[in-house]
Length: 631
Image 1 (cartoon, rainbow, N blue to C red):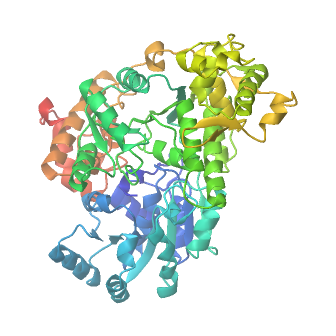
Image 2 (cartoon, rainbow, N blue to C red; image 1 turned 180 degrees about the vertical axis):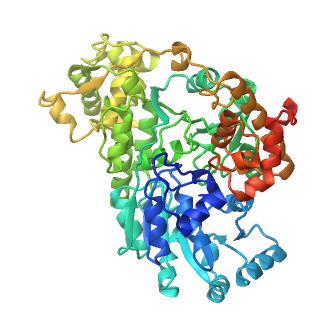
């Protein structure tokens, strides 16, 4: 992924020892030093050795191959599945003064020929290729003629057949080492368990490579999971009270849900765009471009959208349906807050989600081992949803990272849930299933709840279910409470889903509960409430980035954003390609008056200083005052 991840921290204590890599980092990106494992990874590649890197979105993976590509002789070849984003990635690098290009199916023949000639002439620092392009013999012969600095395999988790985003062409990438054995390789991903990491190493022939596993924590993201109850209205309240006018992504499971939700938000006055694989390719491309280039848009999408999206100011990621795995959830929520500013990962989760996912697994293609693997993924996701402990701690533990105690920035930390002994209600529900089963009948959750609440509906009466001994024995709970019981029993495997209609049945674990040999602790279902931000009185600016700036500084920051928007529009690039919010905040806080002072600010390299310095200084001096229409 490109340059929005490429942020480095400046040491206030010691001056880093100058090296070719640090000189490039300072000159091109405007950062004084690497952070975390970046320096060690860069040195590994510069020494000609391979590396496997696990680093969260926003952690700076791109620097780990971009810097060595500029230091080593030759061109860095980046293997990426993100064809639709390659042009933006190249634009972002070009703005830094990096000679970058790409080869993919979107190019015209003369454009492809020009890029190939530049490669052979040694005029490219980085070249992006899709894995499908690399398997073409013509491309392999082209690379044989070029001087290659390194191979970077981005989104390396795509090689995992048990993962959440498998791409068959990634299986062929072991050929890199076979055909070009002296070229160092670096494989990078933001989401991988220990098992997936081992699979990546095996399939890419990287078992001997040094492995780097960064801290997976994204402390600026607040994780929240709420019971689903009129999800569109819940989403609307969340957006209006916590993120008005801010950019974000809403994920839905189906294309139809994407269309409905985008239309609903538009009707409510919130600018929203749909994105799913069923849309015309040009529509998808146009919507993606608008999301990248405009402020305040909400993208409503299936998981087909998002990988490689280099938009640093995504303030929220919302899920209206349950993700299939923790890996998918982590990767999708990681698209929020890449600039390090406060952001929200919000998920509405309900009984129907559990039933639907269990049914999808039961009817999925593949053998029993494949279904068991899907089940394990879902079980882990459900455990995260139903936990009464810190969500962040459980999320990090899933990726093998020990927690450091409650984070204080997730819903279970901010409002610890209560638990209660649900053994007797569980026995009542299971007993109802047993009695229906004796009659050769299976029903869904709604019908079971009607029986337990003693509702003599037409269906319950016509089926003779008022005669069941469990009819009306569950009035200690209301419908919401019973649906919570069913959801949690499904999540913990005490109830199973059967058949095409999602009917409920017993599991192997049910017997211990019925016999009184197993207790069933359950979460208390919270009362529906208004958005947390409204209740606490928290407010945000439209940019979400001015909280620590004084009045005049905040006003300057908004002028700088307006200048940036006008500049980006004129150049036809996303605003973040010009500068990130974090850089503009630093400019607003320091208000430099000379080019020399401007050049000391983190994130302003030599190329951007020369290209944008006069405009920044003029804006600071009050000479540039674009009207609001340019924002």
